[in-house]
Image (cartoon, rainbow over all chains, first blue to last red; front, side, top):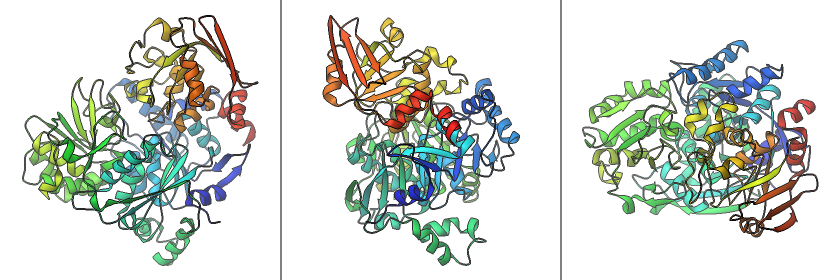
Length: 427
Length: 175
């Protein structure tokens, strides 16, 4: 019997099995941000164990509220900053260099196929796009990860989602993952890894694969996973070119992490995407999804484009293509937050930011900010936001506010019309 | 080891998420104690008052499927902990929340739907109380003059975490 990617990674990283079914794994990367790490740091200090297992394997960023908006967030940032300096973390990203963690860390080449990755952030599953096992954890798991470089998991079974057919124009990775979550339900993948397979995934960029994997957690999944392939090697090549004689050699090594053809799955879901429409959410759970045709005309107060789900360059390009030469509706506030400084600069050099600003968008610095209702675009009671983010929980972007999740294309069309709109008529 | 059991608070809805347990705007607090006033602040349920006596007296929460879904924030178990709620009993949990509870030395007990239904029959009793014996793995519910008891399953690892007082102590001794 063959093994899945997750099973291979678990077998190769196993440190201990203290009880049947509990696997303690060695960690390749432990990532930290300023919201969930400070209490771990404080606890380590209180225990007299202010140490890190390996400063090269710990990556840290101030991203959730940055630049700090008040004394409390400034204190959180300072705790993380002081700790990073104290332990000589080479990969620490502060104001001027910081961006949304799940966009920034892949961009820096930190994630490789076969890696184990944790972070005190639920959307850590994003990094499975590289063929890694990447799981969001709480502060205590993070604390032990920082101190010991290990984390305990129940070995997850794998759900294989086969995506076949061809994506129609105007339909993107975001629409696919919203549809998948609608099929699986918000806890359909709890204690499971979701493996995204098939020709649709093979044809996707790393950015689109990250969008897919990013929302695995919204179906309860521990990690999303895509198979490492030539696209993965291309993306990573600037970071690995000194380690391999050729791209083929890198691909040959990375391919060991691909699921075997005879691997066993908990469940297989086949989806032909050829007939898919742009998808939006309508309630307070991410599995409540409808095609845009059933939601078109719903008024919105704000359009938000950004986050670890859809704040990457290809997202900005798609939205800009629709917004070019147009103005957003006067009843709508448009907010764009490119997810990293590199994306921001690339968008500037490509002229995308001009298009957004001409259309009437406010361009903010890279930050998680509005996605979780902390800064840079919080909603008022009763307001509605069309958003490229990942969670539509009641009050997520501000107490009493409503969030509709959608693709960058659908959000751009919605910004123009001031009501939810089908992006396909603008393509 | 913490104590488990006491007056029960019944939250009759599936998918109660971590934003409802502790809204993100309070994640800027840097001590657990500071979270105390914000327990379940954004949860909207018929008859539920986050500031009510029943909420304040609760030591056990009983709820439905997929409790604690959403964010990884350990602030969710912490806001329970600082309000002396050390047990959540539900039909199922989101993985990260469940692990966070045990990592803090607290209990996230999964019961089959029929057992959860049994517990909810006590929801209207003003004196509803649930005893949790982690050693013997039994739950005793009482209220309105009635008492019922039954066994529950818990993974040996999760039980060991509770007995060790949490994952940091457990891991520190072992790795």
